[in-house]
Length: 97
Image 1 (cartoon, rainbow, N blue to C red):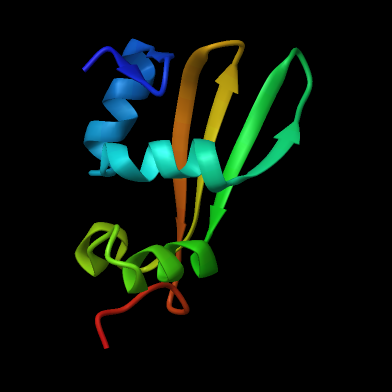
Image 2: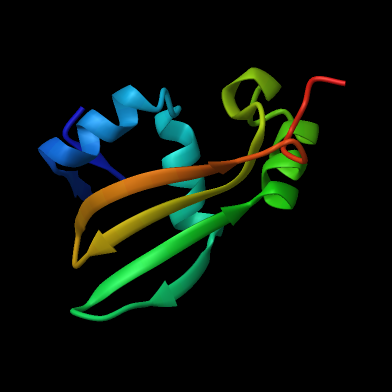
């Protein structure tokens, strides 16, 4: 995989995606539906909240196992390049019950 929604993947981004076992669909969903926040040096952060993930699960776009314990997902971009991705997890995150 070289692109997600016309964003190029860096080596660092691919490593983080693999290490954190994040479904690429979650990345594309975050880029489309996530809250956009501009940062310094032309970086942009997209954040997908727990509520948005729950809504996607209810609508059948995601499986619960793909986002277990997640409270948010953040993708950092610069221009059309995906820089990094990280997840916040916790006891109040998504569960299978």
